[in-house]
Figure 1 (cartoon, one colour):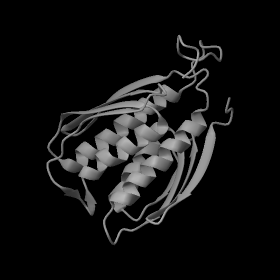
Figure 2 (tube, rainbow, N blue to C red; figure 1 turned 180 degrees about the vertical axis):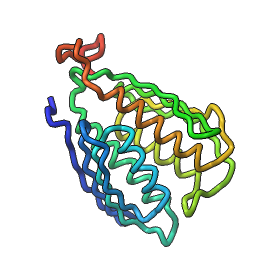
Figure 3 (tube, rainbow, N blue to C red; figure 1 turned 135 degrees about the vertical axis):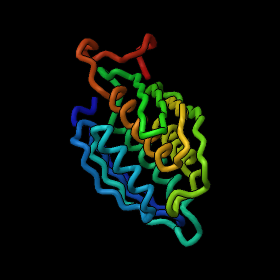
Length: 198
């Protein structure tokens, strides 16, 4: 069991160079540098509302576009989460949250199941927020869910402002994840599955 619940990882390819450090039982502190301003804003919100201490330093081929950087950050962050959670002994496993931001309302449901899946029902009203393509949010969450080996359902319940929709989606995921990784005082260190393994 990972008693410190901390992990870090670096990954370099011909397209990106990324390092991520994550502490699950943190204070919401973050040091985010991806070269994409709005993405930095969203990852900062993820750390703050997830109660995570998170460092993400990424250098990517932004002269092409943001796709490789956003997707690869999702991959590394998912891998680091999986390492930090460890064998999942004594955790809640499931988490859910509905988070509003003005007119926007988004729902996140997460299961640290060991079976990767993304259900994406989030729609945006425009193609870009700042310099970030809104289609990249789905790429990030898919890469994150696949690499973390979690089932993640994200749904827009309402909203017209793209910034609000994106931010409420990240905050909802943060709150759901915070619930799922929390230690269950009644679990007595057991695996939260009838199979005995996740």
